[in-house]
Image (cartoon, rainbow, N blue to C red):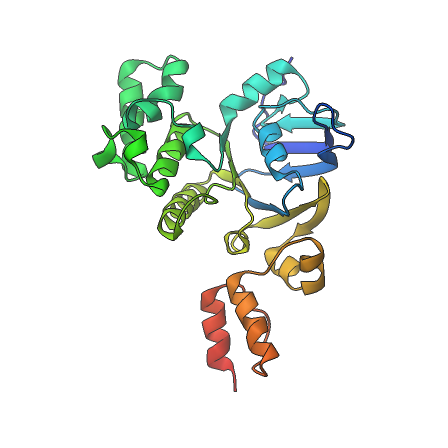
Length: 283
């Protein structure tokens, strides 16, 4: 049986999590701990094969952990089927390819899909869908077929559908990986607005710039935690960053390139604004 959600407990309370794919010789995730609280923005980084996407599916109740000391999502026990089913209601999951989450003939029907499955009353569903279309800038596209949308519009439609069902936490698995810069900016702005409204976010990415503004950064290496702390603390150690198969944010990489040419800056800028400020302070 799943436990009753506790509004004061962490949204994710994971300890000693293991997951091994059928036929594999080693765990994809091994002895992983993760805690995420209300309103937090946690970025999850790691090289390819580090277990990031596996973690997203486990957090959303889409897969059963192989083992764990405990694994709770919004108070629901992920080790049992009832708990995973309940977690899917409270945890919204968005994957990198929106094509896999768009199922209807037009945008508004896609946004309504989850609400229809939950048998919302028609009037309530219409109000909720209208609110989501407005929130994600999709009102003029409501009757558009999903395959006619741009990449950013597709991902915003998928995100609107995920959030149309009220959630306690949102898990995003590399949501901008398949987008051009304009689409990436559209999705990032939508995610930041939802977090500003109080929604907890677990943001999985390989784009270092997207992790800079997170409250906390968790890096996976070989299926377990290799770093947990601030983005500034992570990127301050260039040797560790390289060892983990990561890079620096674009501003940091440019600052290092300038230093190699004899133009060292004070500190390591992580954003373009910080880089411009450092250049202004340079002798």
